[in-house]
Image 1 (cartoon, rainbow, N blue to C red):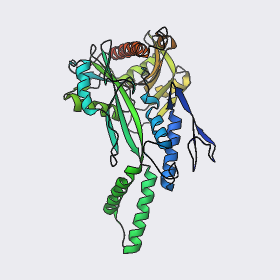
Image 2 (cartoon, rainbow, N blue to C red):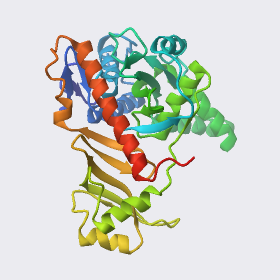
Image 3 (cartoon, rainbow, N blue to C red):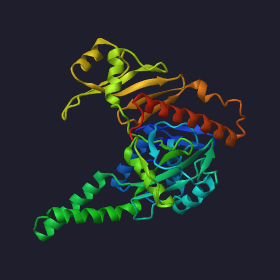
Image 4 (cartoon, rainbow, N blue to C red):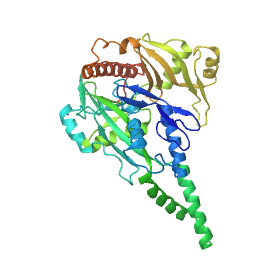
Length: 382
């Protein structure tokens, strides 16, 4: 447990009495999303007040700061659970020929290194089985699992804005002149470079696996930018790594809209309770429905008005629930309990075997679902 507030010390409740809860995971703590956001807000306040933990004596890897950095580093993306939460798929345009060993050797050239003092962002590879693992690539069932760590310095914009305003005020008062845009930008850059060495950092983790049999790479990311980050670092290591976003014959929004209008889905899918409808016009409106009957008159009215289904919650084959979007990104995976418990008989002491088995289950489900989605929309266009 962390406690936090204005003028706080590690392990002691503060004036606000706000608690930041951490989930126990063996001997590690995994900070949840809400806790992480709250910590970041506190960082910003303390940074602006010059009141960093430890009576202002910030040490990079000791005391409260070291504990906090360690726990943030282990937050939800850094765990070694094998179940992806989202999938952004890219088609390999040629077979992937590298073995796990060869790929690991190439990725070693970009093993993760923390941000330097004046560096805003750092990216590199870490062992996909957690920090106790030695290899940068985990192979199972014809798939190669990798994890990229991205560290960025947390420099709240309000900190920069306040310091910039102070510097501008001093210049205008002392020199009797106005500071214009170009000079302001230069001052802002100076402030950023001054603050970066003292800024906290936050890590996020992007996992992906290459299915060498089906010629796909699946990235556990909602953001296209994070997916491109991973692909670019991969290219830096292996050279050519040609991939394409899947292109299908039928427009996904048109097909999903027809499912609801005809009240008929493919036999292996069940309708969820969330959807997004969007007017195809340039300035069209958006309607988001949550926890409703998607075959109701209300939803039907929006479709009659010309709106199309651009996101739809589906259950597939009793194996997982997900949100299908018109860009074919699969979001908010919820794997069925029965699927996740298939390897429950493997002893907890044999962690490596359990992780390996879970990864094989997950990869089989994700690849099969992706191939099925492509089929639903008429197959890939050449």
